[in-house]
Picture 1: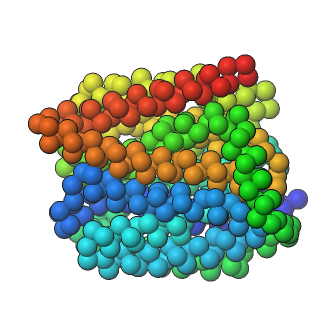
Picture 2: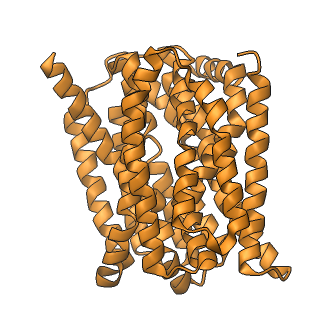
Picture 3: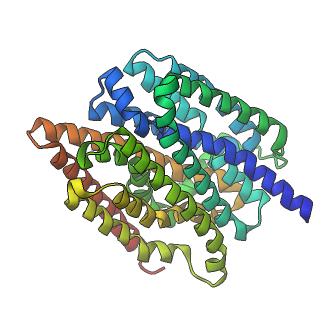
Length: 402
């Protein structure tokens, strides 16, 4: 029993290290906004596109990744994809233009595409069902370690070694992760020799499922949007609307992500207990997600008075949206774990890309029409809030009898 527990801890730790790196890369653009904007003369739309490039590459790889995970397992798939992330990170460090940054960022997204779905696919097979919600929440806690590392620590290192050297350090961490995965992660014992027709039939089965369909808009706008704000737009709002300087903004992001780190730790501890008492995760989503809409509405109307505290409350109140991910996996047979999770991720991360970019486009468009910087941000966040509410209503309608 002890050996089994130790092996589970080792597997989780190795996967967590890779996922930490992927989330450090995901959110680092929020902290680097002033430096990159100055060096490359980036508009708000360009900044949103650059940050979203990661999610574009990530989302494009989800369906292929799901098929590969179900057949070859996490060890091979994550290990080989991280080589692409390594190349993208080194390329980003030496980029001389916005196009170079964007292409490198897309490659990074492709390379880390399996860093969460790979572990969750493995947990679906290796861990007991009652611990899968906990493993999911604690992986999201690890994500916030990456988010935390991308804020104040990066801001402190920035004037000392520069952003290019920071990316070379991250590249060395990716190399260590590849080595650990190749040595310590178990091989995939179950062989699934599916042909292309079976793959397409399985995908069709997933994408036509009523429960899956009901979660698509929530994944795209709500879940994707929360990530877009946490990993990018909370920073520029604090810089351009609230009036923070670069250090204050990085400090605000630091405390936002520290709060989320501990929230996911506690959340992961209590989820199995709630489940054992018969409290359904989707009922939690139904009754608590609207709190996040109220807080986002307050952020919009408060304008320059909305700082790190309000964004912490918004992201904290959105934590329940994370329950949708493991709920998708548990809704399908084990053999479809990889495909169901990555199908869901197609919408989640394409949504993050879309929201990050569109918020920037709306800000630039509003500014060109003569709106102040404060009003431009308020307009873009209001449109995002409206889309979130529509998504929630769609979810309620399709699950009204559940």
